[in-house]
Image (tube, rainbow, N blue to C red; front, top):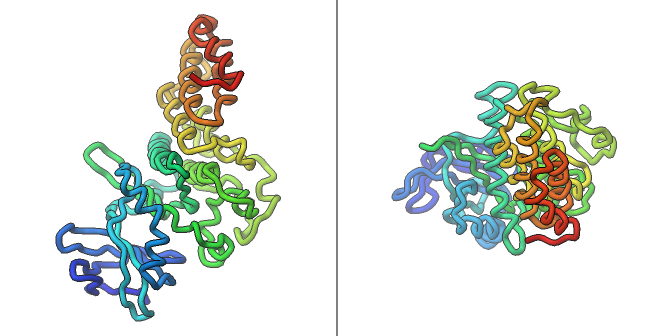
Length: 348
């Protein structure tokens, strides 16, 4: 039995329409606001007070003030009386397209490469806005269920929901009732070694790998009920093994995001977004082994410049730039001084 039923009045201006779905911690209902129209309302199954609800929503409400197109806006918070007692709730944008789970069902086992990449770029863009806050805001629980899919005049629009809601939850408590969440958690989180921006990057990599291959990157067939070192002992196969339209550069980007050691991943969503943009600027899947050396060199140089704008990525940027200059000596006059500065840890 759900906490609320169709027709229940939550406040003077909010009436429940129907249940959209539920997870381990909350139900999501579509509600109609008397003046603002359709909204989504998340009702917590265990959070009972308004103060607790506001604490949980602190980061999500902060991000809402940024007005980023890839982050769900949070409108209001309150409490509602249910048959199980008083429960906290908050209202947010209603996204009619549902979650990535529905997108997968609509496209079958795997989705087109460029659609998966567009999803990845928009997730990374929204996360970048969060990761660049001071202090950084981490999502901590990215899954298919909280990536929402909308369509507007300009096309696909992805929105990330539920920022920070997992911040105060013990992951192993979450495991007991939400195994799906654990499939997207980075190894260091499962080892209880802490959570960083690179942990969010891992989750994005896992989501996109699943979109392209219909399987998890480190799936060894064992239940996801505890941390198993053996699960991460082997390098996952590149997505192109399952989806032949995946190009080598996308293979590289995703496998980098899925490195077991967080120090080997793109450090932030901004770095991941830059790599995805670099692939698109360079031609994406249209590239081949026959790509002219000068064109490949220019592409690598553009990727290097994008990476160098992000803290902690100079070594990676320098490596790409060195490859570019080796392929096209004509670029040396323009970029060699910059490469030498990068190798000394200097950005300009």
